[in-house]
Length: 373
Image (cartoon, rainbow, N blue to C red; front, side, top):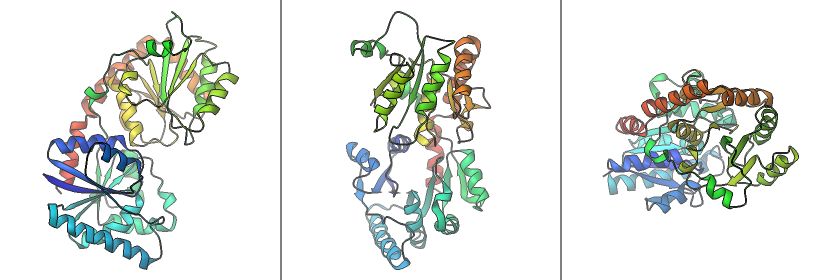
C-alpha cells in the first residue's frame, strides 16, 4: 500500500477531503494524518480507524525563526522515520501553518510537497507571511479547487507550472435518496398541512457569520406572492436561537424549520424544490452540498464571485446572486416557484453537470497523478 502524509495545521471539518481519502484508500493509497489531537479532521480519522498522529503546531507560523526551525526540524525527523518505515515520499499540506513550516525541510529531504488551496482561503490574512508564502510556493505543487483560486494565485506571482486545477467532486450514489423526512418531522410537533409546500433548503453553520437574516427577510417578502413557501435550515450553533427569534418576529414561525445538525444529509436533498448555498465564504464542503443538491435535480442559488461559478455553466445549472439583498433573493425565489419550465431546465442541467463533470472518481484519478508527480 502506498502512503502519503497529510499535514493539517488548519484542523477544520472537511468532508470532501475525507471522501477523497476513502476513494484513494480503495486504490491502495493511504493518507496518514498529522494534525492536532483535538481537531475535527483528526477525530474523523480516528472514528474511521485510519492512521493519524498528534502534531503540535505553533500558534503562529511566522514565529521568531529559531523556534520555527526547531518545529520544522522535528517534523523533518518524523518524515525521515516515516519514509524508513513505509516508504512515504509525499507530504500534502493543509493550512498555511503546515505549508510555511514543512515545505522547505521536506524538499531538502527529497519529499514531494503538495499544497491544498481551499476556495475560501483569504491570502490577505497572511499579512507579513504573504511574501514567504509566495516564495515557498515555488517548492510545491499547488492544487486549486476553483478557477478563482487559481487566478488569485497567478496574480500573486505563483508560476502556472506549479498550479493544478482539480474541480471538486462527489460520489453521486452516496447522496441520491428518495426517503421523505417530512413525515417524521410532522410527528415531532412541526406544524404542517395537506397543502403542497415549495420547500427551500439550506445548510448554515451558526457559529460563523451567515446570511440567515437575509434568507428570512427574503422569505417573508416572497411569501406575500407565494404564501406556501417553507424554509428548512440544517445546522447548529450559538446563533440558532437568535435565528429562531427572528423567524417569529417576521411571522415565519410555521414557515421556517430549524432542524439542527443532521448526520445523514442525503435524506434531505430529494425533498427540496430549491437549495441555497448560504455561507458567506463558501469552502470545499459548500461545493459538496451544492453538488449533492444538483445530483438530486434540485436547482441551486449560490453567492456570486466566490468560486462556485465553476459548477453552474453560466447560469445553465444554477443561479448566482449577491445574496446580500433580500429583495434580489426574494425575486429569484418567486421566479423559480412560478416558472416551472425554468425550474425543470435548471434541475435537468444540474443533475447532468454534477454527474458528468463533478464525479469523485475523476477527482481521485487526477489527484493520484499529482501524488505520483
